[in-house]
Length: 193
Image (cartoon, rainbow, N blue to C red; front, side, top):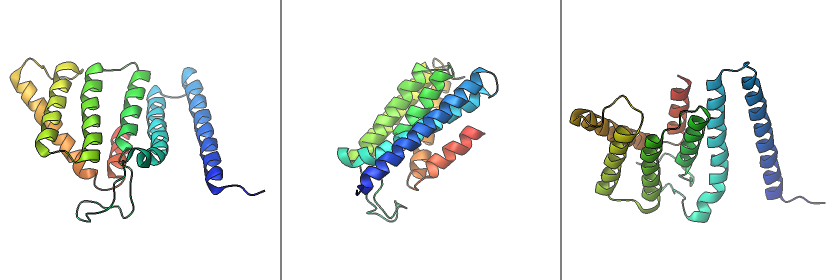
């Protein structure tokens, strides 16, 4: 009896996913009984969701035509084709963990949704800088006006500072994004404090 290597890999991934789900259930049970800090559960859920998405994205990217080929060595550090869908996993992990923590913020969801859609569209069609800047500004305005932040959206200076910071941070992360794994590693370090 010969087993297809692809079938074996799928079976192994399903086993890994089941083990991860079991670990998360045990962690949640321990947290319910007060044995684990709630923040640990939220970080674990966010990481697990992002990791699960990355496994799925590797398969999904080529199907939807989202594969980044290393055609410009000055901008791309990877030497093999890569799927630029990691941001979706981060987005899902962050918002799911915020929901579990009871800290769900529709303003943050609106602002990050704009940035996520911008990133996906830019990866697919290489948008013009003015379009990217416009969406980044809209995201900053949404964050300052609707999200739970210490900035007062009605004060012009707060709005200006908030939008400038959001635009600067989006572009800083975009610069990091050219180096595979750097954004994810930086995010993990920031999450752990």
